[in-house]
Length: 70
Image 1 (cartoon, rainbow, N blue to C red):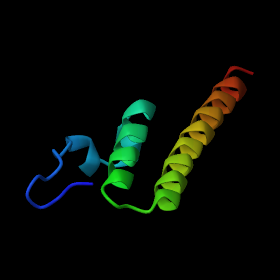
Image 2 (cartoon, rainbow, N blue to C red):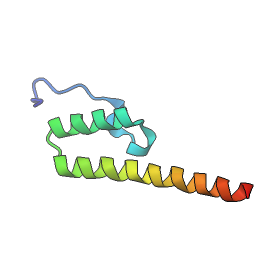
Image 3 (tube, one colour):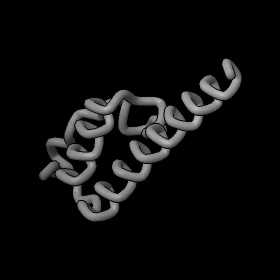
C-alpha cells in the first residue's frame, strides 16, 4: 500500500479508458488500482465487461463482412 510519505508512481494508463488499452495494460492497470485500495470485484467486472464488449464488436463486424460478400 502506498503511504502519503511515499506515494506510488502514477502510470498514464490509470487515467485512460479501458477500451483504449490492450489486454495486458488493462490487467496491469486494474491490479495497480486494486493495490491502491480499489474494489477488486468492481475492477474485475469492469475488465470483463470491456473485454466482452470488444469480443461482441469483433464478432458483429465479422458477421457483417460475411453477409456483404454473399
